[in-house]
Length: 151
Image 1: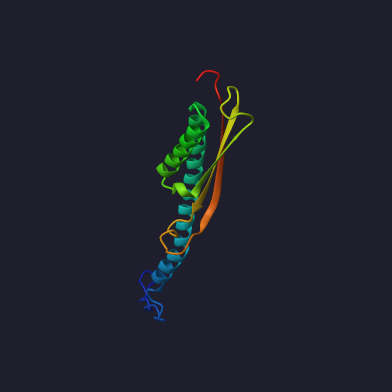
Image 2: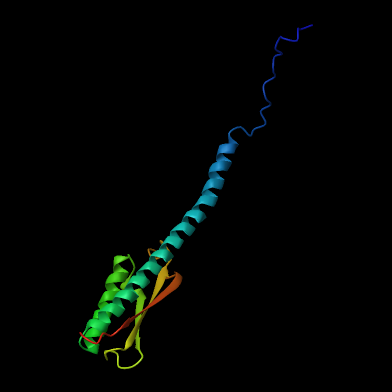
């Protein structure tokens, strides 16, 4: 009879053919779950970048519009400001639209000018696929500026 302090030999675990499958399952599930989460994070970042772009574009468009001497030059300067702001944030300037509205004569002193910029934000990596033109969302921002008495 063996003493209570002596160790009993253990039988080897039964091999039921599933050895090493936990790693395979983990890798499969990690890839299955991580790819959509990573794409969601990229999409949210893209939308946030688009929001920043339209806020800056609308603000700059309103500011440069009220400083120009005539309406044609003002619309050109505002359009250039929008294109530059949108391009600086990595978006296509052709996807943005600028709308200028005034409560009277647009360059009359005391007039309030509103610049609204709308941008279609594309889904990440989809633009690289020929024939695919899917947008995540459309972001919009407006800014107002008062035409000063002295220019």
